[in-house]
Length: 160
Image (cartoon, rainbow, N blue to C red; front, side, top):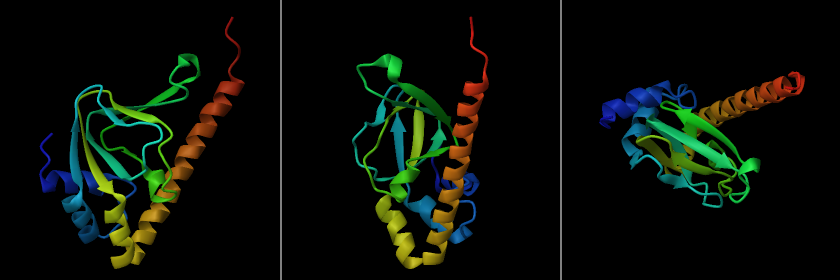
């Protein structure tokens, strides 16, 4: 995927986390985003690495694995595709990563370091408040989805 400013801006306008920001702020973020390319299998981050910003998948897929690396039966995995974001929690708690993120395909990610988002909080606090409100909505959606999956697995009849 070509990573011109127009392409970054078009994608970032569609990302739910950024969708309610003013067009000028989205354009500023798009212009400041770091473009990172990963080959299939490349590790994006490991458990324990710093939560240092927001990732937006421009192209490709990213798989997340959590659980003890030496106990495959206790690991869980999920995959996100183009247009999805990850690393959102670092905007709130700045805690180390809990999972391993790996490019499942050749992948391009637009990365917004915390420093850029902290600049937004100082220069446009109302826009930053909108971003954090969108983050809360996104986290609520993810929690509801996880609860539905958990409920469905508890209600499913045992396979014999």
